[in-house]
Image 1 (spheres, rainbow, N blue to C red):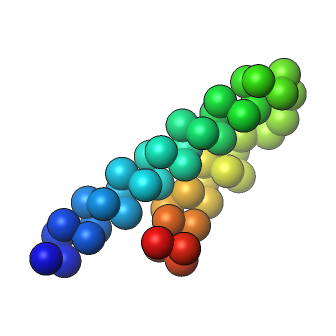
Image 2 (cartoon, one colour; image 1 turned 180 degrees about the vertical axis):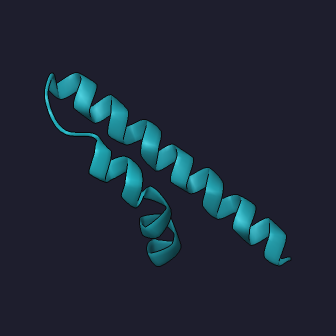
Image 3 (cartoon, rainbow, N blue to C red; image 1 turned 30 degrees about the vertical axis):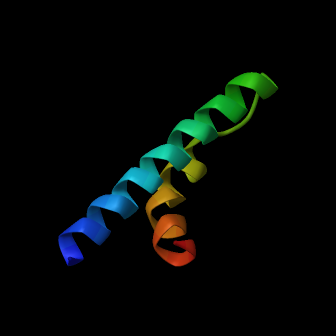
Length: 47
């Protein structure tokens, strides 16, 4: 059960990273480092 939850959070964090990269790419500028670093924390806090 816990392993499934951890795996799901990892998938959400990876989705957040993908979305962050796409947003910066589409905007044409931005600093991606902070968003990539915070993805795990955000997934754990909000999901």
